[in-house]
Length: 315
Image (cartoon, rainbow, N blue to C red; front, side, top):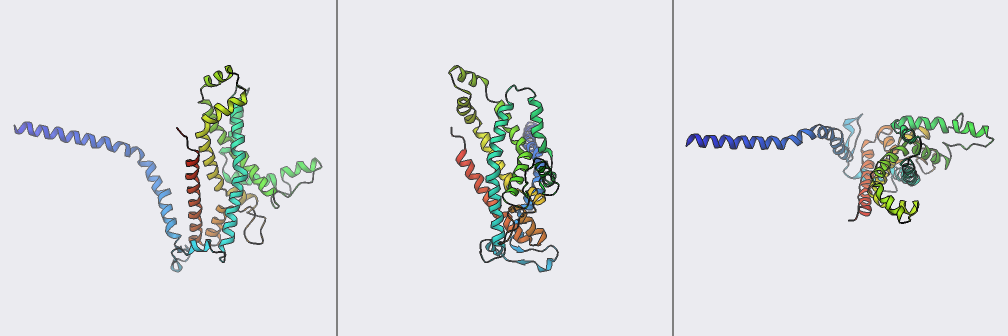
């Protein structure tokens, strides 16, 4: 009887160890990503939130001062130095989003529809449109500077050859924005195109064949079949494009340096990320820069949540 009891306990223990081991397996798979997430995302996030409550100075740790919400209050006080430059930079970022997001959705969608047909050389053009995406933001910014600069720039060189008086692309408005948006389109249009193209290839061909038999034109098929089915993917592409546009930094940094300057402070093409960089690393006001970052992050979280609520698929 004792032997039977001992055997039953051993079986029970082995079952418990097996069940516990199986429960640990998923955590072992996600452990590498979780470790990197904690080190490179979670820790910087909470540390940034911590220093946003200080007048933070890496060079003089003894001068650090706890100010609670004073950094945030200054960003909402019209009498502070940071108020006009921060909100000017945020306004410039919103302008860039309005200028860049519509073409970054419409043009990739048109290219995806075109390259989803049996057009000759479609694989070549798919690679051609996607290839700029592999370049870094710094490379794109430097290319934009050399292409659009007033003296010796590629665009102005050919405009002069054609007898056209070229504008000062990088130092006057609205040409500075035109140059920045043009380089951004060239850089990122292929990424959105590939996502939309993959979604288009998942649409059953039978739907289009049935619509054709019913007498639907290509435009009617696009409006009634393609767009409704693409809606979840389009929402995803719109949201990631807006978030990416809000992270604008390298193009104006290398091409215009945020200029032309404004009398009220800041630059006419200075985005909020460039302002945060200058506040933190040029003016050595890391606490203020962290506060700016969290205000921008809050705006983006609210915006993304609102988009998902408005455009989520209705069953």
